[in-house]
Image (cartoon, rainbow, N blue to C red; front, side, top):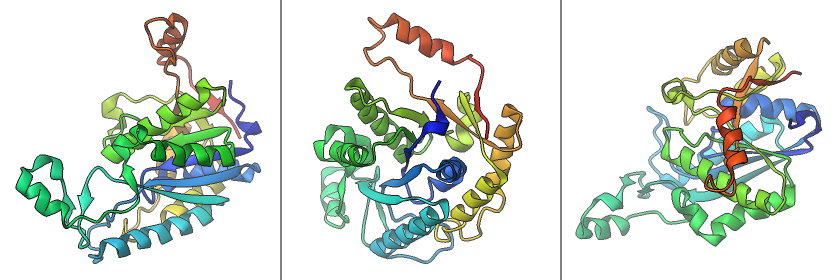
Length: 285
């Protein structure tokens, strides 16, 4: 069993600004309070802002969201924040008009591509195929030496979210094949979790202080949530807490796919199947 109390360094990788705070902010706070060094990563940049927010300049929107992430990371106690700047699953113009060139004919693609804002690294859904994208994560891991990495669920409904999950899973899996020994957890896939049959394997108890810190961090994003999301973290952590028999908790699954492939790794495949119905692992305070 992984020893959460011995974590000295950890990393939480979200797709977008505000993806770390809501569903992993409380465990981030808990680990920081126990003395661990936390690295906060935003993998993808896009200029999305919430309904009612008048921010029509794409680069201004990106910088606004970065500033909000810096504020949220500070509330959580992050020792380091990194923006990978992978592209989203779509492109956009300087005026934040979305562009989906893959679904257009040649003339439209050429016209739309001429208006697109280009910066940063390739799109997240293809990132594992590009050495510079893989190096962006492996270099950070080499510097921070995390015992634990937490990221999105691979069955999340948002293309950027599941793109980040698969990218991190593949890269960390390759490192673990070489003996890195990194524990990798996936958070819940959000509102679609019950429909997908998602079930946590791990329940981590968090304190009322952790819940409050996570909510304050989530409140740092007025461009995303102009009206706020009052009480979101408390409601979600109470639901997991009921499963764990504690006031507050957060739920995760563990990366456990067989590294050799199911053709010749029967033992590893059996362990993965058994994990689906295994009892919850609860990490108390």
